[in-house]
Structures are given as C-alpha cells and as structure tokens.
Length: 230
Image (cartoon, rainbow, N blue to C red; front, top):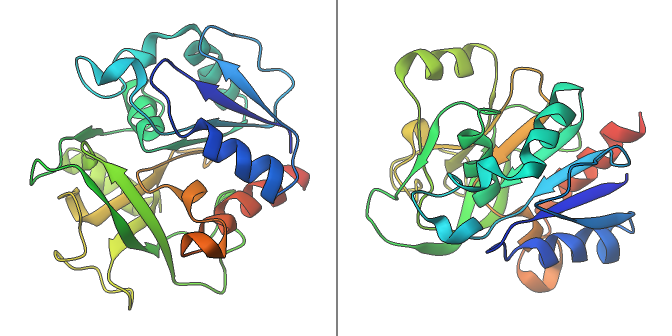
C-alpha cells in the first residue's frame, strides 16, 4: 500500500506514522509537504497529529486551506483511503470531509493518557481486521478533542453506522468516567458516508509495538493494507 503522510508546519506525529508504515509494516511510504498537490501515486493518505500552523484560530482551521487539502478532497471523493489522526481529525472536520467539530476538552486540560475504545463498526477499510476484537487500547494526546455535532448529525451518524469508535472502560462499557474529553456520546472516531475517510482522536501509530504498551493500533493499519490489496 503506497502511503503518503502529510506534513504541515507544526505537525509532529509524522515520524511515528512513517516508522510504523516503513519499519513495522514494511510498506512503501513518503512524506507529502502541505504545498504539494499531486497525489496520484498514493493508495492511502495519512493526516497525522500535531499542531498545524500552531493551532491558531482553532485546531485545523488554517491547515484546511493548504494546497494539499484540495487534492485530498478530490482523492477522497474518488474513493481513496484517508485517515486523520488527532489534529488530522480536526483538519478533516474543518475541511468538510467529516461532520461535526473538535472543541477544547470539557475540563480545559491537555490529556496524554491511555484510553479504551469500543469498536462500533467492524465493516470499514480501517476495521476489517478487528472482527475478533471488541475493544482497543490506544493513547490520546490532545487539548481539543471534545467531539461535537448537532442532534440531526448525531442521528444520521448512528443510523448509518458511521461512529467507528467510542471511549469505553476496559470491559467495553461506555461510561462518563471513560470519556477523557467530554465528547458527545463518547465518540472517538467517525467515518464519512462512503466509508473511506476516518477521523479519530486517539493515536494508533503510538500503539504498534509491545514495548510501547500496546500493539492494538496495528489492527487499524493492517485493515487499511488489506482493503487496498483487495
């Protein structure tokens, strides 16, 4: 799976994503500078975490206007696989590729910790290798991770199985205590209508080797590889 990892000024998780794709999964991968526009060679695009353009105005608000984003929109509209992680999720929402918005955490604190995710939809290009799993253990690292959407959007997301991950406890129970940022309905990750664009706040690239405390993030990347090879 030929993958492009987008870099904006302020991106910081690009090297983690590169390490996973190249050294752990042995996949062809390249960086994509935010001013580039030719994505024809790629099968998958990763928009990694960080603080694009310093998160000025609000997270993802400026990155949404970068030249590469017009190409990513066309790439996604043509069926290309796109995953936005943390700041990448914020950018996808700002760009209109995903609905809703990511607001400051309800406790107004930056949180860097492990969370548990309940898998709500196992029939996506990002979760097709998770059929025998119910939860994932993956870390978060964000200050603006509170997902919000209006009631009509939440209804549509639920009816069409577009909520992919929810924050839960270790046993898969969705509770207020397991919600690290106040996200509505404990939503941690959603997908677009065509099921080829995923946004999630937790960082799967930081949970791909046992030495890090979890390998659960690998399942997401392996699912993407499987999807593009079919």
